[in-house]
Length: 243
Ligand code: IPE
Ligand code: IPE
Ligand code: MG
Image (cartoon, rainbow, N blue to C red; front, side, top):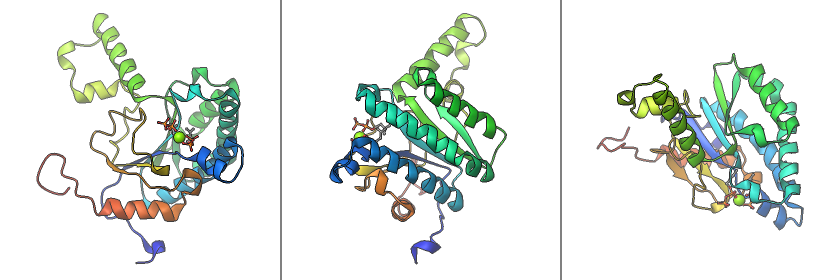
């Protein structure tokens, strides 16, 4: 089968990416690290287009972790500027494709201009239902769980919520991922085999693939290679059947 003809046959409602390797991609080309982020942003729209065309409902992208504040301020500033540019340049196409922008993470510490761009992008797309682009910004999996636990504790204390009613689904309704399907496939580019505090709850039964390609070189062709691997996975969810 040629790559162009690839069709998904397995259920894949939610694919989550850890875009990694931007810095190494730039270093290899003797460029400043931030140009790796710039090139990486170009891949983001290409991957969103490809996932839309393949019929994948939700795409998550780890763009900035709660740990990434340890990086040099100059790199952080560039990264947020590129994110601004990404939304400004592509919001019309996201709307046209019916893609709603969803946010996970606390953007209050981000530069005001980035906060405004993200909020505007969410407002402009909130009515759209065909697809979701879930951007994870100043996001940490542990932070998400702690915030949910705090909100539940507060609701229980104020008699708004009965402690006995807490189960996995009510707990999830307090999380940032509330309303999104569970992650079916997690792809981390650049060869690192760890999840770096990404979607600790949401990845509970996700398949994982760790291609060596750095994110700025991760094209649709590379994506399809991952999907071909995913098609061959045996997902049992604790049972005996391949679901
Ligand atoms: C991922 O690329 C992008 C972000 C963390 C925002 P890196 O910047 O981590 O690239 P490497 O891992 O240093 O190559
Ligand atoms: C994870 O990548 C965070 C994002 C991609 C946003 P890192 O490059 O920060 O992860 P570590 O430090 O290698 O674990
Ligand atoms: Mg990295």
